[in-house]
View 1 (cartoon, one colour):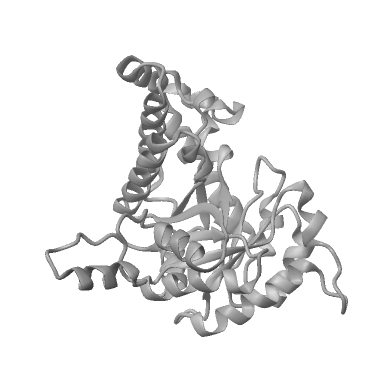
View 2: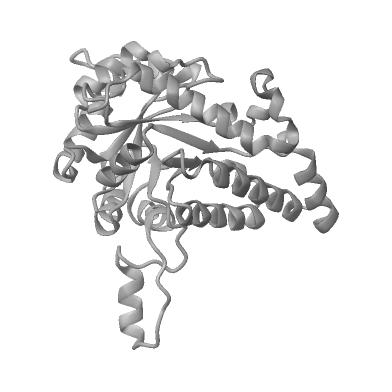
Length: 327
C-alpha cells in the first residue's frame, strides 16, 4: 500500500494529524525511570538507553490509540552509541506493533551507494536469511527489497542539498518497500533563511526550487488519495512561506515541525494542509512527551507523565481539528 495512502488512512482513523516526536533527554525523564535504570545498570550508556526505552514504551502505550504517527529523532539515540541504536530499533518496532506509523528523523543525504545504504538501513525491511547458494544470497543483499539489519521505519527525513541525484537511491528503496521520504524544504529553525530563502537566477528561492523537485519526483508516486509518498518538511514557524510551498507542492505530504515549543500555532500549521483538510501531519516533541513538567498538566504529576502526554496530545488534536477542514 502506497505510504501516502497508509499515512492518510491512519490520520483519518485516529481523527487527527498529530505526530509525536520521541526525543528523550535524560535530565528530563521521570525520576522513577532514571532511578530504576541506574540501579540495574549503573552510570552507563546502557542505563540511559534503557531509561529511554522504558519512557518511550510508556508514552506509546498512552498515545497509540490516539496519535497516528511518531517521529523518533535518531540523534538522541546515536549519541549513546550501540546501546542507543539498539533501543532506537526497539522503539521503532514497538511503535509499529502498537499500530503507529514511524518516521525516522535522521535527515540523511549522500550520493550513490552511500545513499542506498542509508535508505536500506532505515526503510528496508528485515528478512531472515535462509540456506541458499552464495550467489543467490549476494544478489538478495544487493537488491532494494532485502535488508540484513534494517530499522524498518515507514518514512525517513532526507536532506536534498547535495542535489536531486542523492534522492534517487532513497526513492528506489521506497518504491520497492512502500515507504516514504520527507525532503527538507523549509525548516522551522531561525537560521533556515540563510540558505533556503536565497533568491536564484530567475527569481525563485532555493526552497522553491527544492519544492519544484519534490513535486516532480512525487508525480509518479501518488496513491489513491492523490497524495505522494515524496513528502516535504515545512515548518509551522513560517506560515507565509508554507502557503506558497503548498501551492508548489499540491500533492505532497507535509511534515510540519515547529508547533508548540518553537512558537508555531495551530493556525500557522493549518496553512500546510490541502483545502480538504488532508495532506499533512504536525509534529510536537517536548510539548507532548514532557507535558508533565508544564503547569497546565501539573495535576498529573510526575508519576502520571504518560497521562499528561495524552492530555497534551488530545489538546493539540482538538486545536488542529478546530482550524482545518476534513472531508
